[in-house]
Amino acid sequence: MNSYADVWAAVMTRLRTKLSDTTVNTWFDEIEVVTMEDSAFVLHCGNAFKKSVIEKSYLQHIKTELKDIFSTDLEVKLLDDDMLAAYHGVRPDYPGGPDGSEGFTFETFVTGPQNILAYSAARSVAEATSGRTYNPLFIYGDSGLGKTHLLYAISHLRRKLFPNQKIVYIKGEDFINEFVELVRAGRGSEFRAKYRDADLLLVDDIQFVAGKEQVQNEFFHTFNSLHEAGHQIVMTSDRPPREMTLLDDRLRTRFEWGLMADITPPDYETRLAIIKNRAAFMNLDLPDSVTNYIAENITSNVRQIEGTLNKISAFWDLEGRQLDEESVSRAIQDMLEKDSVPSPAVIISHICKYYNIDEETLRGKNQSHGVANARQVAMYLIRDMVKIPLAEIGREFGGKDHSTVLHSLNKVQQQLRTDPAFKETINAIISNINARH
Image 1: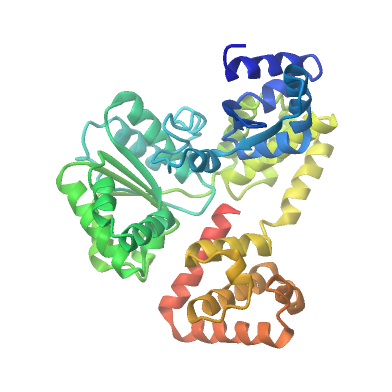
Image 2: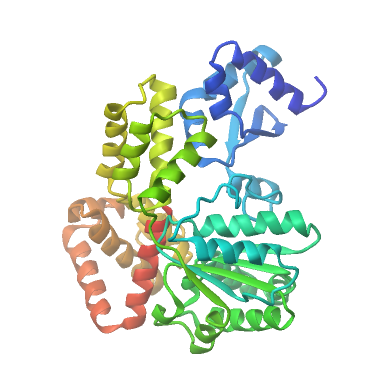
């Protein structure tokens, strides 16, 4: 075999003799070979759901075939996009890596009355040779409605039409963290060059810069530099600029200079179209009765619809369940019972990222002001969002007793009543958790 790709092709051929074509085509179609190191075969799968299914149900199959080929046991490392970037020692500037995310294009975005303005404006921006029409384009709406999909679609089409342009994609939260890290390291000029030299800047969840004075000042100058040069800026947010109470006035007015387009939850007809479109993409042959049932019961956002279809696909492929209303009802009920409640671990992870603290420190006994404040916020959000007993919250933080947890909750509640900036911070963290868990 001449390459690692040949090895993987041989593995796929062997898997097809032991698994159905549907199984192989559904779960292994997005896997790419990265390399082979020491005693591990390294693969990449950008689809988080498929990655989790493979790790749970098919990893041993891959190991078995590799052992037959090499006559020795090999570990299998399956990397997602972030893990792949870390593996190569880089942070990708583009959604889905340098080649874009093929699944998030304008062709796969289902339009309806609730998103047609945002879609049309996004497509116009992607096809424009300069940022003179809708600049900036500001797309806002609740999480799970397709804002990030449109950013990915803009990036994908712009790269196709203008391959030599520099496109930079960044999440608002990552913009903050990167700014802090590079300025502390004395590399502020490197940070400015990265963003101010962009032909197209895509910022997801820009609301997170609100209330952070130095970051807002940096983004103000970045915005001005790009706008004056005729370079395009596209931003998404969970709310319009006028509702960002901690946003600098000079940024608020600039965010409103171009076109603001909102996205609202899809109506029944749009949900039906989304379900059929997504089912076709997943090679799911859904009866009309099942499609209608999903559209009638899953109503809040596109992400929930896609999650439901992923669950149905897993039921069908892994457990051989029939795609009828009864099995779909069980899948939907399971999704709704979760009620999108994040786990304490998810909340702690977000708090650590927001305050730039590692989990061991947050869960431990460090009593410095910054760590103690972040820990109190984490305790408050776990109590508020997960609603578990105080004793369980204490166990998440090294066995803190009931009175310590109660003191933290009371302190956060008091600060929420008296400090508007702190309240805005808490709302932003909650919004981020709900959008990503």
